[in-house]
Amino acid sequence: MDNIKIRFAKKEDIHQIIDLCEAHANYEQCDYLKNGKAEKLSIDLFADAPKLFCLIVEKDNRLVGYATYMKQYSTWDANKYIYMDCLYIKDDARGFGLGEKLVRRIQEEGRKLGCNLVQWQTPNFNVRAIKFYKRIGATSKEKERFFLEI
Image 1: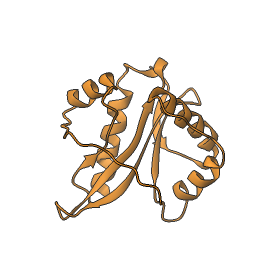
Image 2: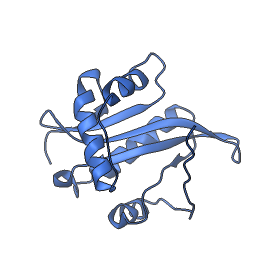
Image 3: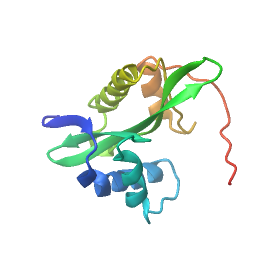
Image 4: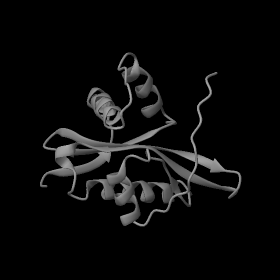
């Protein structure tokens, strides 16, 4: 794939990022409502001290993928780590190493933030992603993720 750039998201990307979020949710068999997301994400992504970071994959001025991450702290490890919240590449852009490039870039950014690890999750039915993650050297632990509304 020619004309590929991996870069941090800009404010003007937000609507394309929302479209990628919706495609990602659909891929993971989840509902997604766009209402108000652009405003909320913009606040957290583009603040002076962002809560969330977003790297995007751009091909020919069109976003074909994204990854979001944030700095976290592990009590067990007594150390900082990166939590990769989302990683998604559009179907027609898969198979060209773009996902691995995003993960490696997140590792690089994590080192700059003083972190020693990247953690993430994927649904157990996402066999293709699981194979990809294992291929790049990631390991996993069996856990259940719980949700409790506040």
